[in-house]
Length: 108
Image (cartoon, rainbow, N blue to C red; front, side, top):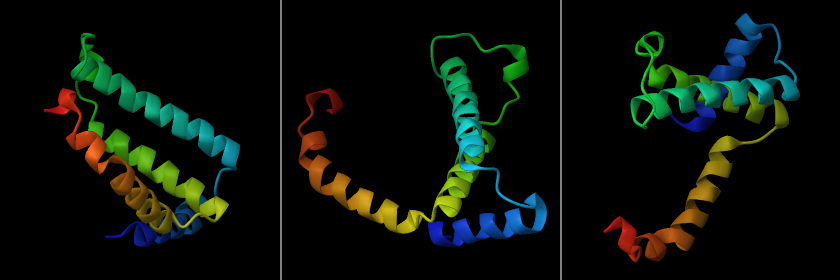
């Protein structure tokens, strides 16, 4: 499924179940909260912090999906075609970073 299709799917869900989008500032705060939840799982599960019993059942995929959902909401409500933006960014990164990463001794 492409990003454009996913953006439409989120918009359809908002119209049917969500009544309306939260305003952009509320969604930005929500996005920050969701990224924090991802950071907490990563820090405790893959980093040096110990994982609390209450955190062991948390699903990283579900938290990443929350980040994606709110990101798609923000794109929809601000008129961003995220597929076009992603394609453009990937082309920029490909041109800029290909040799840089292949020549990075830290990645060898």
